[in-house]
Length: 188
Image (cartoon, rainbow, N blue to C red; front, top):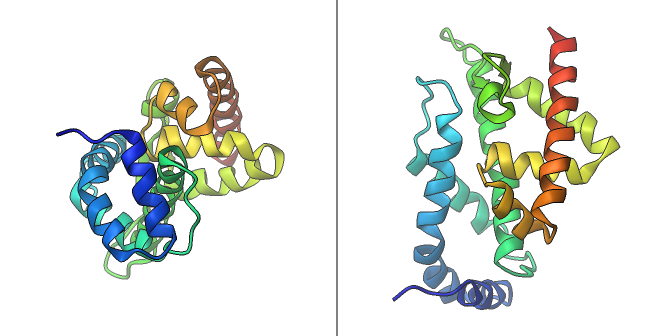
């Protein structure tokens, strides 16, 4: 039987209140969605990326365990945090690859997949640095980029998570993409 988003919200609340069994009940409800998001995100990565969707979701779960003290407002809030954690995982992974001693080089991500621009490729670390600069200007746009680019959510899913209209999210997504595209071009 399919569980409703309200079931997820209830379990998140119980987990926040310290009920360890709530996390156990929550995992099967969110696993497929998290894995779908991870698979979509990894399709934007290089083909030889060493993370697969299962590994990304498992790393996400390891980091979520540390979020026990978080006060989860609802399902949307949870997936917003998951998007941010996926960003951190991918950036940390890129940094580790970049600094590897045996021939490791920077991990590249196709920005074209996220920006609909033809064949421009940007480094995950450069994107992260650009997002840090964008956060000083418009933190809401950064959240939209995290959800669309790093978590792979659609405009409608992002709008739901943020409690905004799809039209507003689409407009802000376009502005953020244009800003990031300009910033990343300047770094080349």
